[in-house]
Length: 276
Image (cartoon, rainbow, N blue to C red):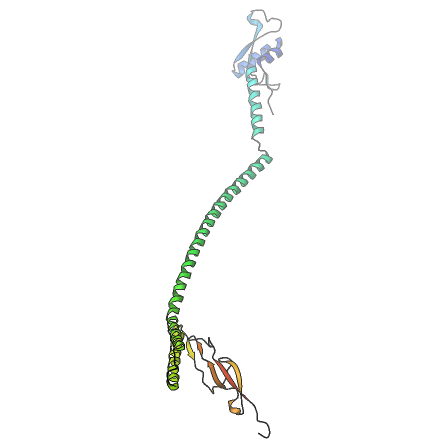
């Protein structure tokens, strides 16, 4: 609580003529500075008895409340300082809403920075993905090129053998055998067929295929053979056995089943009727 202020003018107005001696005694006892106060009714008289000396102390007597004595300028300055201090205290009190808004602004700014970093990372990732896609396309093209080279290298030998067989067969078909004996013509055809068989077999082996053994009289198996027809037989032991090989079979080494199954004709047992 603010302490009441008392000026010298207030003291001069409140001191009565009869209070001069107690004030002087108090000043002498306290040893403090005194001021000259004119006695009421004798303000304009220059007599030294008309002036009382009062101490500038915290109290005028020991029996009455004490009031500090200050100049009017000091009082006004103190009041101004107190008002400024109160204003500073009011301004220094944080506004909860403003504190919340400041915090939200900080959070939003942090999220903006994070979003900017994420967008930058996304741009870098998209650029890296585009580069990888271009690399993959290049590698795919190279793989296709190498695959084509391998296929050509693989097919070239059998292709060459097949071309030789084709040329030999065409030459035989165009040749005139009218002036040759029948036995000679048959022998030449047999030779040409053996040459074609050898050439085709070489071409198949060049592809990595090996022949599947299949003989007449062998037991038919749907796992390894392909039946193209049947032929009747009255012999029970020949039932479901190979009667004729139409096309040989081939497979790749290590394969559990033929890649190209041999085509065969199978015997079918027919029991003879009574009277036969």
